[in-house]
Image (cartoon, rainbow, N blue to C red; front, side, top):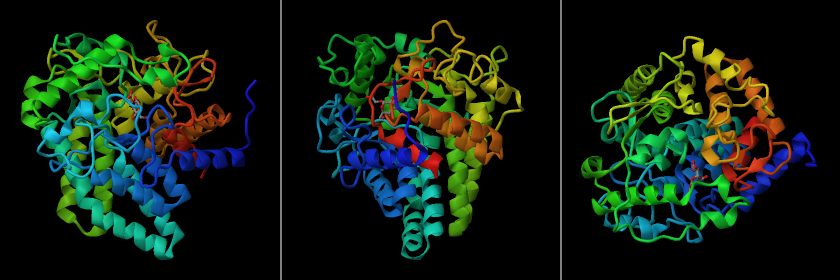
Amino acid sequence: MRVPVSGVGLGDRAAEVLRGNDLGSMTAAAPRLYPHMWSWDSGLIAVGLARLSVPRAITELRTLLRAQWSTGMIPHIVFSAGDGYFPGPERWGTESAAAAPRTVRTSGICQPPVHALAVRRILDAGRAAGGEIRDQAEAFVRETFGSWLAWHRWLAGARDPDRRGLVEIYHGWESGMDNSPRWDRPYAAVVPGDDLPGFVRTDLHHVGDVHERPTDDEYGRYLWIVEQLRRVRYDDAAARDVVGFRVADVFMSAILAVASDELAGLGDELGRVDDAAELRELAARFRAGVASTVSPTTGLGRDLDRRSGRWIETETVAGFAPLFCGVDDGTQRALFWGERWCGHPALAHPLPPSVSPADPGMRPRTYWRGPVWPIVSWLFGWALERQGDDDGARRLREASLRQLADGDFGEYYEPFTGEPLGSLQQSWTAAVTLDWLA
Ligand code: 9YW
């Protein structure tokens, strides 16, 4: 039987995880499975670090920004000196990209733009601490605002060239929800060429059960897209023409909308009137884009496969993008707490699984095909609180803290038994725990 730890002990253990995964100026996403910095992990890790040490949280995001491409893109992985992760820097080969940084090695795709949420948290925590810490936090925001703005502009330009208000992704990895069933159809059209270089996976060494991870077939497709992008040297315009996976991602678009609002608020404080106005326009555009995707059948937001022109109808948690970014008329909120989702009677905790428990294809132990991801619960809690739904935010927080009480900080959790799965001592799980406990 798992022994629950007390509230105080849980915070200490979460802090211990972040210290244990600290590589100096970046935090490894997980001790063995992910020995590098991942972009959206680092944003959420910085949210947790801001509760422990504002200067350390600042360092985390400054490290990430040192890897920013000259186009504005923030890459999805910043490689540390550690190894054991595949695909590593050699496979990505981003040194051939004109826009890649010269001093750090990175991947050549991006991840959801949660970073502005962390910048706001850092500023608030710095101000609460006062004195020199406040000065450091304010200097950090002043000095980096332009870089975050460039990141949002790149997403709105390179990834939404037709101004639909939907961010296009070129890889399931960009969504952060790698093997979600959302991507099954678009991936089915990705056929690895005979000249796909061979590969040996390392991820399977680090989990108890290989069925919790994507299959080899899925990996072949993931790597084929990397190959396609590498062959055009990660050039934005060329990539759009050659890449075999091009999907308008509804959840990433919702994140861009709320993060642009956060950044606009920071712009106001810095007196950057025009930039703040531009960011608000961008937020409005992506909110409208998200609202335009809602399915009349399921009531969920949908991704759009740009290559086939078809909507993606799978019932995943990403379908709550309208609720997340505040364009819900109450329908989604009811669905979210209802029996197909958090209110499903068989759930161990009333938290949103990655796929609806009422969907017969839901796989409770397999990565983004069913498990509950604590960071997803945190993102919804953050959004509800921001919308003034304190009760909704409290319910997610309390259920999540019960889920996390064993102190394992799993990457994801079995929704019906509450068992931690994937990698344990996962940094972003520990980070959101710290934020919930604060
Ligand atoms: C991989 C680090 C990353 C997350 C992703 C998650 C997983 C990496 O881990 O992807 O190699 O499969 O899907 O969202 O950023 O925690």
